[in-house]
Length: 241
Length: 47
Image 1 (tube, each protein chain N blue to C red):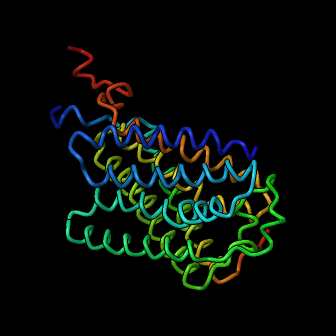
Image 2 (cartoon, rainbow over the protein chains, first blue to last red):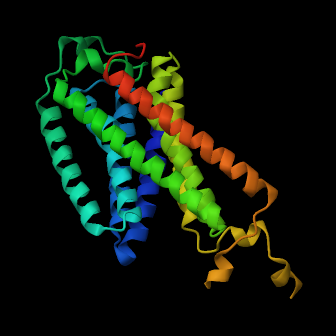
């Protein structure tokens, strides 16, 4: 099951390429940030995939930085740019996120790797072994929590809020269903840590895989040119004419 | 695409199932945040 991260990586980078391809027309900030967030997601699963064959301390650091610290926050910042109307607020949060990310990068590069690294088991995910291998000070842990809470609230909360608005107004069914899928997909890797703590290690890889598949499906549905509502139910007036 | 064409007629599924899904997702969000915060204080069981 640990090789599932290879497929997660491939799908994530294809998804990121699709987001960047859409971004290059009008270059909206939210798509750029979603694309970057997905690159972080892909680097996290890529590091996991590499470490399922051989251990390397730099891949552990890359996994922690991208997978555990930056992915959710950068994806969530994209949603902030999409939903927050006051541009100055989104820009201010972007500056804070950039500073937090650069500080995280520096701290993780400087974090020492302990002698426990020699006992790394490639059949177990990094998430159940990193605490003994990568020395993290209190500030790194604080930043990890802060970035994850921010990312989860903005990404998942933003998708739930958007889906609720589309449902309440009965408009754009494709975006309503798309946002439901994005919210569900984003929750999966966020809850992966809980699966690991419960001893369901294999669920970690599965949740990462299903998470990106659901988000990709949700994004494709939400950005489809032909709204899904046309397929769901044609109005009596249009079907009768 | 005009405004009228963006609207959809809610079916029984969309009017009843979507709020349930939204509530489940919101609950999932709260649980996830609670786990993140509890883990920060070392209050979750470790593997």
